[in-house]
Image 1 (spheres, rainbow, N blue to C red):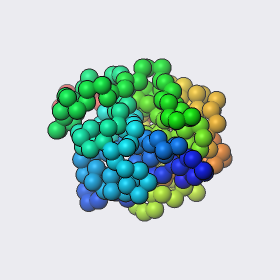
Image 2: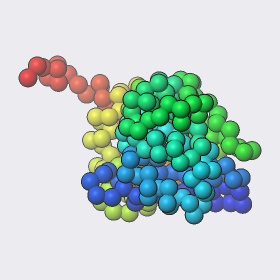
Image 3: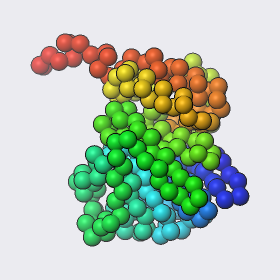
Length: 251
Ligand code: FE
């Protein structure tokens, strides 16, 4: 998605086969340093580790970074802990749950390798650059971060902007109105409330974002399409905005 002399951003969009939901794994390589974002579930480890060896050796990966704690995000962490020396970066809320979330978790393998992101976010050093961990709590997880690369100006937005498309998930969104249908139901249910959407959009508008890459489906590329997405998300009624007593009736 981006390449210059010492900086490269890659996404893999077709590694989940069969029953799994299509998902995007993002990789940043900067001056020989490397980070993987939302590495995925158990089934993704093999194809992802094979796909990246063209660019970086698995054992040399510096960070494995997770937006939140869901199994489709982190359940391959045991493999990354065993086969790489990477640091694992995740919200401080989820750090202590990691042993419970990972089937083959080995305490001694994880020792000194967990980086807990504080609620306010942080800058993660990467060579002469950084990756910004941006607060995205309640979108949808209670301890949730998105990751911004100031060189490519790409924002990896986890489940925000996620869509389920039938084909070509690597192709940027062209017809926004049509694309809304592929996002609406998921966002209405998984995002906690419009208040959080608005706060998040306010923060993103202050940043220089050229592309939003969600964990599932198509990216939003270019200022105009990024703005269309922000305008939509800002006004979205979702989560607790939409519930009433009927939802809380004992069966
Ligand atoms: Fe999730």
